[in-house]
Length: 261
Length: 286
Image (cartoon, rainbow over all chains, first blue to last red; front, top):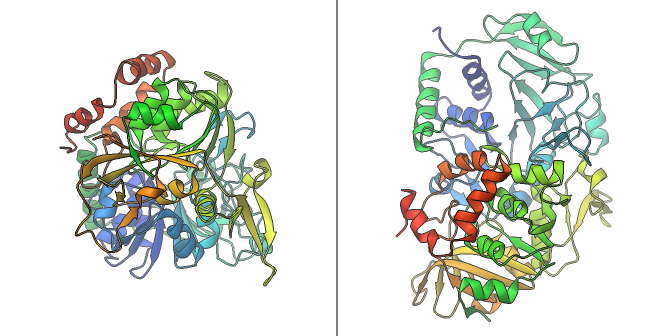
């Protein structure tokens, strides 16, 4: 199957990582598309949780916000926000946290707070929301975002959510017992942390993508695993389900031209 | 004890200049009509508390109501950034805005502590996160039993809590359905409270035994404002007007366009326009 976008490849590659018995805390944007694609293809019993309190939700369209009515209508149960954060997230019931980022470093530390100094930011981003605690309380973390020199930087301006800190066992030295970022899925590749250094390393290149393209779009010297696989291209089924989902979503949001950031 | 009032009377009686005000609703049931009334009455120097400032505080900040903002996620959900809030933080327009920034877990815990009458909330949070370096209200506490270091933040006890809900009965008990967010916590944590509702019904006979109900004696004022959460939504009444959220991104991008929009739709309007908005938006409503 040819004729798919790098964005579709990213969402499909991310979706494949989710298992049928996972309990996944879903961030909005690309994570939401990937999680729902997984549910609509190979993982029908995947439990999706949004921070508005909706547990086991099965939306027919992608929500514009984390609290759209569709999420509540199709959930197994909807709990108060405090219960969501205390019992379900902090209580250790969630296996995967799926996050996006504005800025990311090679150890999977995430910035969604500011570009520039905190006190006088060049760009004031939305902030952490649920992410600072999702990052440390979920069993492991998947991150998905498009590669760019603006987003993939040597040093992020602000650590909103902890990844592997300064690498090595730094995360454990913070007293965190969860695994942290275990996969980074971009429009070009799938990355996994090196076993020792915890630096993100390319483990799979999407079809047609060169190492040079990967190097040019990250702000640190990109590392590659000893054996780099080729990501299988999207199947016809994966593409069809994703496109149908996005068409339904666009129609429901009134064909709005703008996409979430 | 809940008193039924007009929206103008309720805001005049319970929201004062300089108050700490929490208008909550987690995407759902956001009390837009009450915020617009507060803007119309020209309140100033407010400390605005809300997990997701959303359009409701973007409007209040742009209209100069706020001195300080306490929040945990300042985006236009699913659309992008809040442009009036950004203009205040980045360019001091219309005047400087002090910010106190948290995570969602911290704010939810802080409301719960307020409702529970505790001085602070304790939770496992902010580990390795830099917000604790820029927000002096985020502290650490050691568990006396296990020695684990945990995060602590002060309880949130707003002067006034404002929420929107589906129904009140004649006695003034309030029913909240769907995504209940922190609606209950904010009313119980606040010194005074205003609840706007879609409708007032005779009684709650036949309600599910575990329905989320705030008894009338926990609420200061109740106001019927059909459509009062628009462009947010009211489960069972009307849907979220997603197009309005997308449109706001353009309206709020420019100071003059923002002021013109606010003048027409807020300053020169009243609470009665909300019922028309939810039917006009094609999102339901009665």
